[in-house]
Image (cartoon, rainbow, N blue to C red):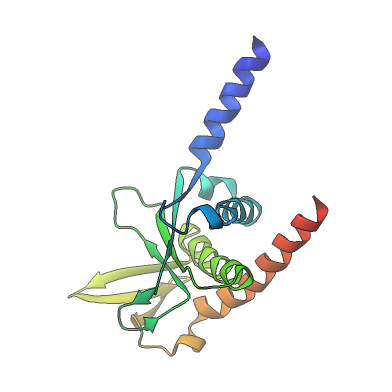
Length: 172
């Protein structure tokens, strides 16, 4: 009985710790691995206190577009809810598995930046501003994409996460 209760408590804590959901659509069945990849990457790279009550929704969509950018491989939204830790990552269904993993890792890098409080956005007078490590970088998109410090870090983290994921798969 004691073992059963300990198991239930462990399940409860793992559910409370972090949820990763895949939007069910025509692409979900062939991309179930994405949920496992996201869970493993976050458990390895995001501290436990930041994972507490985290919810990640993954949506794999056809012909993915982002306002102001056109066609994109993927993007993350920090959802505007009463809970501060709800994120949605959108990935383009046309990507190869390797490209999808790389894009997922890049967007998870941004999730970690947000969850740890290093990258924040705020709106003032209908203009969205970017904060990075407490420094105001001005209106969103006022800095060239490749020069944004959060993008530079995300690109480096993306490479590390992809490598870690492949190494952990080879170890199993």
